[in-house]
Amino acid sequence: MRKRTVFSLALAAIMTLSACSTATGTEANAPEGHAYVQHKGSLDVSVLRTSHYDFPAYETPEELAEDRPVVAAGVIGGWQQGPILDSGTGVLDYRIILRMRVTEPLKGVKGRSSIPRGLVFIELSQGAVLSDPAVPADQWKPHKSVEDFEKALPAGTKILAFPRERPPHEQAVVDPGARLPAGARLMSVPPQGLILEDPQLALQRPDESTALVGGLEELNAGGAEWLKHRTVQELASHLRGQGFGE
Image (cartoon, rainbow, N blue to C red; front, side, top):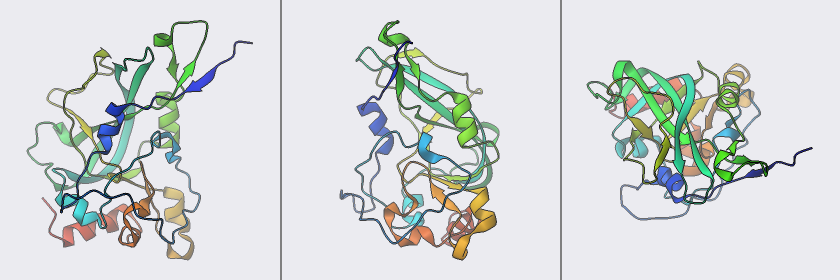
């Protein structure tokens, strides 16, 4: 039997997705974990957590919203293959695209040509690849396929995102991936910039705890203020109350 192992890339390009700044511009490590137990739901966010981030955490959702050009609530419309990049190591760097359909624009959505027909295309790391000694390293495939992402975080999942247009890739593009609609641009999000609503937790909500889960980082990475909102709609309504809305 052919032996295959998981090979994970630690790439600076991946870490650029974590770049964010607080209102003061100072840097700090994420605060120690607050009293928060994430109950097991139906979503599997492990597919998103391919890197560990050292970043200045925002203490409230409105602080993050103030610092981002786009804020929107919506649903996952699906997943598609993203760009495949030359990592410089011989192993390719695979990206996955989350298609988000905006249902509630909060900031910077209307009139933005990079969000055609209310569709946001968020580029994320596809994670590790499977090593295969029988073929060259540049032919190794991702450990998680597009179908794995679709199963872990299915279409229709409610989501709130804080994206911005990503700059051109620093690495050579081996394959651009699935085509985007005319005018659309790939977006990136900071570590706290993807908030998902777990449908199973929304039904159960033990002890009236939140049904929200962080995508790239735990929901409470910035503190207890992030735990006050039980659903995406509640969080979106809170942000509207803070002056964000279109």
